[in-house]
Image 1: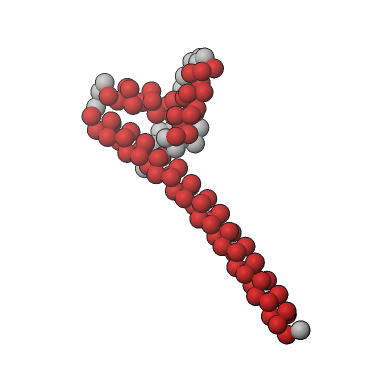
Image 2: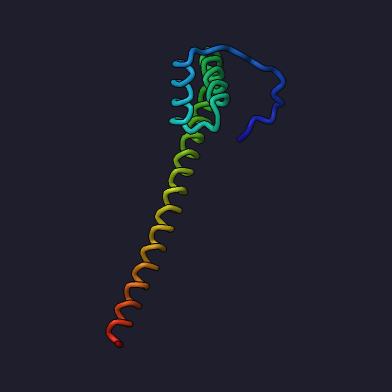
Length: 106
């Protein structure tokens, strides 16, 4: 479930190159679409933990959904690759059989 409240405030902060690279890697690993969403989630997670326990649960659910979405995207890509590989193998097998038939009929 998305929070439909408009986002009208902006937060900006600086990171070293190493910090940025680590944050970017962590955001990809956890399935976030962007480092900005990852940073936003981290800030909200820290804020929520100091307040309402139910907000913590919502954030944890959102993080799990993001992780599962990322895993599903990877699985979908892998299924596509396997499907294409299988089609190529079928075509190759059909060509081999045709060549064998041509050789035996000559």
